[in-house]
Length: 376
View 1 (tube, rainbow, N blue to C red):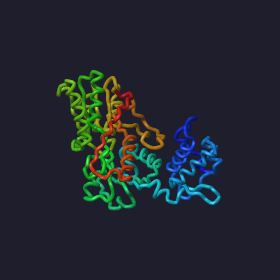
View 2: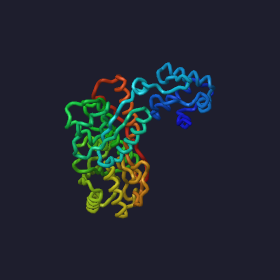
View 3: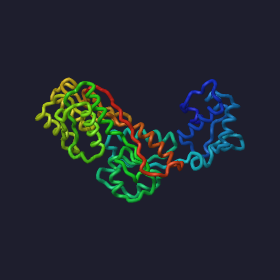
View 4: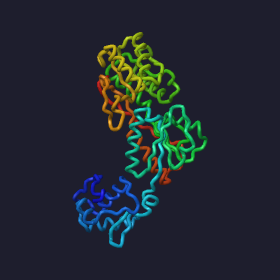
């Protein structure tokens, strides 16, 4: 039996729906989602009729319509196959390459979620996706332009791409990267809004004093600056004084263990109290672990909101089974909406592929989401 009869239907066929049009939509959905190869034979009319719950006449009319549209060809025995020109003339499949910062795995948990969403959506929309990893401080090679029609690049890889190449061989879309007029489109999280959302959450709980924690040296990163500025603006607009806000830089280290030691050293000099906004996910995780180690009750002794933090083991797909000490309590966090960023990337790819967009420097901001858990 053909795999077409095992597909999930994209939508239920309603009693008053046009049966032919519904069958056309179902078959097209299958062809796109499962990347049916040119010349592949479809099931018989009888099997299609039984599967979709429509009459054989409706199926015949649907197949003839798809033949007229160029999707299908008919054999001498009246069986239908997908068109030889299906990919080139009908689906117009584009080759997409996405560059993420990493070596063996994508470093940033948020971009792992984004890569998963892109993989799923590209498969559905018949886009060929290849994901390449670029280690930190490494320069991309010329081969990034080979065998691709559109290039996607994340924030950490974006700077290296802009420094290495003066001209781009294909259109480039920035994925939550620093803005560049050289990119066809820039899809960014509204980090300023994320900072404001944290401040507003604090204010709703009548917080009088707050500490904003970040990695020292990240002040030159636009996303960190936006988070801090967004928080400060909302805090001051509410009438809070400068003295009520502490800005705490914690030195950066590649080692999570060293980061935890640095956080511990800070909290030993400045005993935990009040409310913390930790503007980096890994740093926020270390903060919670140290508070737990020091037997500080969260959120009663100290409350915390992180930024795009996630528990280890939830970062993989499928989620990893591990023996570990879980983060306790689960972290309240501002999370970048990677699903919406991926959906936006697909829309831009389709615009570029169809010729509807030929400009550059377009900017689209995506609002983050406050994920409420138990640390605040």
